[in-house]
Length: 206
Image (tube, rainbow, N blue to C red; front, top):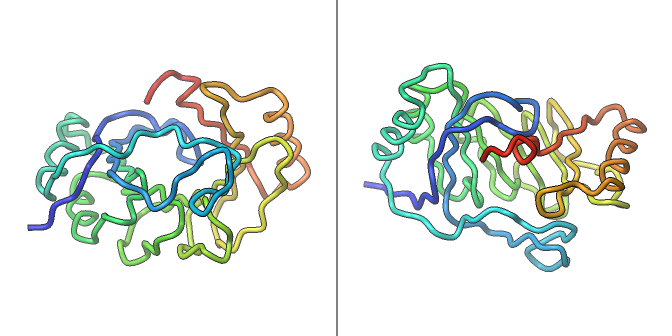
């Protein structure tokens, strides 16, 4: 039986993107194929630090994940699933997606775009690119979200998405005033894009 390496499963509100404010069970998978940091490097575009712990974890099979997700949601049916990480595209299977769809809606993924997830038949795909455009494999998405620090320009994505989002880079638990002003100006001058702030940090929820 296939097992997955899972960092944590928890219930919270989606804090960013078009689905912000909705109730979801988050399934965070262990492991990532990138290492985001302020300094650019072969596994990072630079400009911001990854603030998520995704290295530890435990082995779980499909049944374990479904049962724990249901326990977290108190059996709620109007609750979404969000696969996150790390990079969940390295582990999620079509079978796991279908098993969760029997109880949850929608079933979503947050991916860095380096893995094609079309075969998973998800309800919602959020791509937050962390590599150069030519290295992106997931070119169709529900929404695409770029983190931007002060001075960084508007992206030129290869991804075809329903929504295009700019997310101001956080410095610790806060966004610097000039960074927010910069991102607001990017959206104002490029109305195809929307502003998406990591509101869960402001709400003080996970």
